[in-house]
Length: 173
Length: 75
Image (tube, rainbow over all chains, first blue to last red; front, side, top):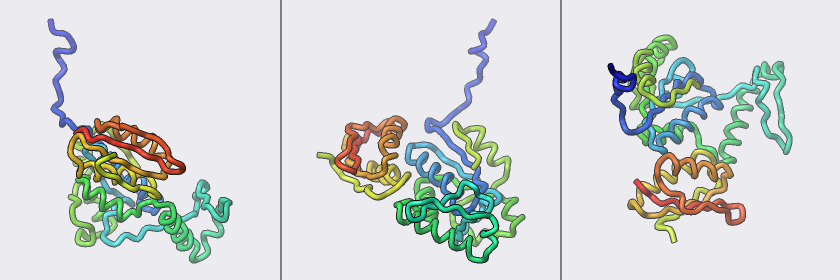
């Protein structure tokens, strides 16, 4: 008779812990969590893979054009002269409001010593973070591979699942 | 006296950790790195960084508005 423990087939595993992140959003605010976590995890010795899909895919473009919209974002309260300013939805229809909000956010980022997305992306690449660009999204939104930064490989859902099944931490952002 | 000092004052999360990791790599195993930071989150973050990476947090304290950490490279 064998015990349960003897029947367990050991899964071969690298010594380092692994983390994967599905990056699905590409606005100026939502671009932060995946890059902050990827760079930090890599600095802490984890092997990190980022899978860029849907609105996250443009984060791999050479020319980043990151913006934010207060529309429908009830939690967005920008600090202004000691107070917090909210933007009513109707005001977001006025041309230039989104651009102004984006500018305001970029100024805040600089003022508070927060890294830019381009910087964090560069640090992630430097730290050896593996990046996978979703082939289907590339086709769907008609992006060209030559407009993307060097380094990311193309892959699909199965590529991600293989990575995720061998990871200790899997995040969907 | 630490072997090297990293001035991370004015930098926000996760830059103090990322810069510290880079600086540690330029120090011999067993050597020490002093980090100066103003990000209050760095107090817990440097502890967590050391817990996870196996490097040693030799000192963690404040001098005025500046947080001071001393890390010893262990691997």
